[in-house]
Image (cartoon, rainbow, N blue to C red):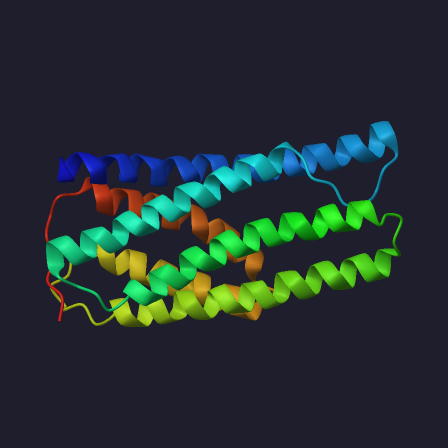
Length: 199
């Protein structure tokens, strides 16, 4: 039963690597359609947001399962609170961003400058917050002994790189790309049965 649960989490994590870029392609497409067909250049909520909400739900599940895997297999609890913070951030960020755009749609038209400032401020603060959380998660995972499973070590380095890119804000496009690698490696950790040692 335990391995089956982790296998499901593994495939869900890998699926995110496919759905994540698809959501961004759809977002670009809906923006182009809005401008070219309807002449609308304001904020919008569309199909891409449904996919991003689905990804947020999938991420919550895989993070909970990752914490469970560390707790049950290795009695490792050093990142329990950080994972909880990451989950809370993911939920608040996604729904907060949608709420912001809905609000901008309601008060539309609004100056492009004001809309840009509000969006970038929300985006920047959110990125720095999750970046710090990811860096702290990576630092805690670096406590793993040298004989660690290579997948866990790769996951640690990717998480650190994502966190650093997010904290910089301007390197977020790199973080988006690294997220795809993150999803695949996390999926492989779930699917692989090899045990690791923690200090």
